[in-house]
Amino acid sequence: MSVASRAVPRRDSRAAFGFLLATALMNSLSFGIVLPVLPNLIKLMTGGDTAQASEWSSLFAMAWGAMQLVCGPAFGALSDRIGRRPVLLVSLFGFALDAFAMALAPNLAWLFVGRVLSGVTASSLVTANAYVADVTPPEGRARAFGRIGAAVSFGFLAGPVLGGLLAGIDLRLPCYLSGVLATLNFLYGLKALPESLAPEARAARFDWRRLNPFASFAWLRSRGDLFGLALLAFLFPLAWMVAPTIFVLYGGYRYGWSPAQIGLVMMLSGALGTLVQVGLVGPIVARVGERGALLLGAAGGVIGYACFGLAATGIAYLAIMPVYVLFNLFMPALQGLMTRRVGELEQGQLQGALQAFSGLAAILGPLVYGAAFSWSIGTQLARPMPGFAYYIAALLMAGAWLLGWRVARPVAEETAQAAEAVAR
Image 1 (cartoon, helix red, strand yellow):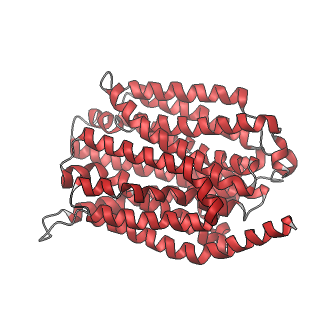
Image 2 (cartoon, helix red, strand yellow; image 1 turned 135 degrees about the horizontal axis):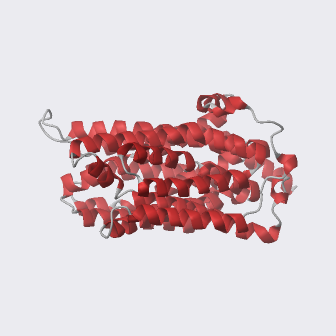
């Protein structure tokens, strides 16, 4: 057992992991609850101008991603120095403040500040993932990360539905509920969450250079094939951003789906993804290894996105979904591979660096896919190509498959050899 894991007694480890699941669920649920109402709040504060509200919504999304880029490495580095518990709890408290700030926002500037704070505190997932790496043996990490991912997926699935229902009562009610949920999670953490990183396993000092997100990229670059794996952690969210960016418009434009139908399709996708992360990650990793699961997930993304772009009818779109949801194998397997490559002192730094890549993807994704979709249905084309943005996502995942085949092989072989040596 590692030094870090001895900070959490065995009898408390299940309670701690339960809190991490609750944190992932509450954060994504609280975030998802606000999604349906935020554009309307912005529209309300811009005098009902839809075009202006759209511009501000894009700015809000980019600011949220920028905070992920900047704060992910900082949270990871800080948790390596002072422990996971205080960083997690401060993040959760800040998340509650953010929700109430947006609920009470009297103007656009205050609402924007609240959204920036949301981007900062959403980096709590960095520390939660580092905690998982602390208390989970290497061979069980892919499955554990899959469960965390399932909690996040379920929150994103249920949040918008709940937010839409509450918005019918009052536009700000979802923000209040988000704040209450975050507060309850914070109070639960105060009582139930032990520290996972023992004092002797912590970084000796805080390196201020690690606050620079680009320094995180340099650190990954210095670690050889770890950087190649990290590039996969950039390609995955960059491809995934196609759906949050264009799906609502795409479904309405190409298939004539109503908002209610689009919501049902999103629920179906989220439910299938949750089932994969809860029920399939562990068995598939046990059978084909983390590298095999990663490549299978990438293949699901390639086929799924390409077929989504080609699907001429809504039925065809739905028919490919069972193949596409294998995409959800990708990130848990990648997390499992990468956490094997760093020591206890660097788990937080690793998760922070990965969050920086995710934040960069959250900035670039809306720009790339929004522009691609707008161009593909524009009047300058003799024949519209509404699936063009999905083709871009498919190409990104094809690149991820090829890169994964190349860079995951040495890691998989090395960890297999290490396991054989221990068995002897």
